[in-house]
Image (tube, rainbow, N blue to C red; front, top):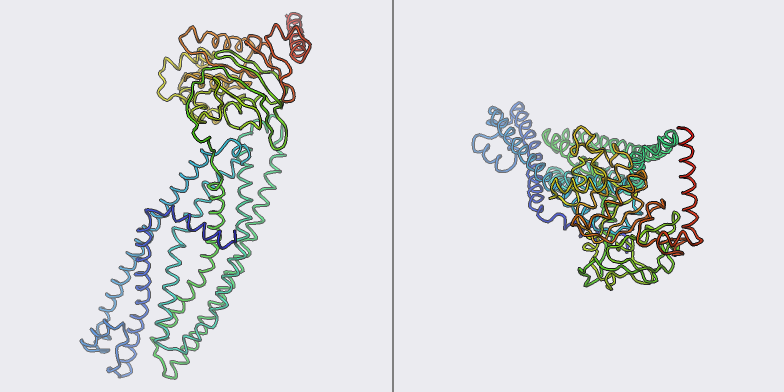
Length: 619
């Protein structure tokens, strides 16, 4: 699509965000018009006053009153220039009233434009957040969190600032130029033409500035986004940085990002300095030319002293908006860059569901039937087939990268298989609505995410109406009640960001309790017992197996782990190697066969025996 068409499309689409705010903008434009008229009346009043005093002092009381027509007619009726010269208080009062009126409408202009821009910014942020929540898993896996945050905050704020000030400035600029030229031509055509000699170069400089600075703003914004992404990543992984003593390395990386942002910002500042100094020079030169030629025409008697004052005032009013055109265009460039970055998110297709997908019973047998999956041209799963009986426990053992977590992602429809099918109760999961499916699947990751809230709030986040008895129950099931009781505030203890004040095992137990607070048809423990000790691991699994005796529905459970003792009690154990199931059976069956499971079991058993012997020797 051509650039101009893209920009028109961007503007048309943006108008949807302005719905409901148009009246405020119209009110702001009307206020600007009134303010500009007031600004032009003031020099005319001052010029008329000067001309009246000059005429009386020169003994020419019959000189026509040089004021706007309605006001001039009133003064002529009262006595003309002589009356004006002896009743300057009336003119002073008129000036005060006119400028008070201008101040009032200047306030209304700011108020209405601010309200409109804030409303639009609010809608944009809500639309961005809602769209990000609707994006698929793959989008978030590839996106940089810091950059997304910047687009939702700083880029939206750039658009808001432009709407709050510069959009109205465009109308103000156009009105001022038209009025100034109209009034100046009526006073003296030659002086008007001489006053416009340097306007074309000034306008050309503004256009050049706009085209040059727009590219620089885009580069600076992208560099700032990368800096934000790195900062967010560093703050999130600060414990890893400290654990490996990488503070100096991370500081150097951060310094490189800072230097990049600094260099681009300095280049923008230099370009802006060239523009503002150049426009200042042209502006002052034009004012000097207007004043010089005005004095010359006044000495020749072609215009009055008051007319010279009007011309000097109006040339300032004419040059200032043209000079400001560079700022308006530069802010427009910023706004366009920010809008494109915002629409990069809004244009990304949200997660789609299969047409006609609906609800279905999920407490049924789960079947993987010759499932294949590739990720970015890399085979992950190769012809995976197995059946998980309803209510049973299926354990999965495999090396890192063998495809264990990918199988669970496919089961949740976070990805779609490239071949084969996954069915629940004989129904292909592609025909089950994604929101419904995921609402019935409890998923606990190895690195659980806890919110910076109380332990109670973190457990109850999946069920906001959970009672204290329900919270206590899942805390007992996950062996969390013991360490929670040791805290001074118990369940009201606040955990830091991402649960940083808790140990890894404590976070995992809270995450499991959070998942169990609601009934699930399917439960996935993705290496989520890796940080707890063996005794706690055994206690949690024992409590999970007793859930049916406690009157709770037993979900079909998948346990991913590298610890054989965690897998041993499962109804079925799958051994995954390079994306394929190489072994399947119970613990007793697998240790009786040659293969990966038996080797891992032998290594872990030997290590445990050696540890017990060492402890006995130490004792």
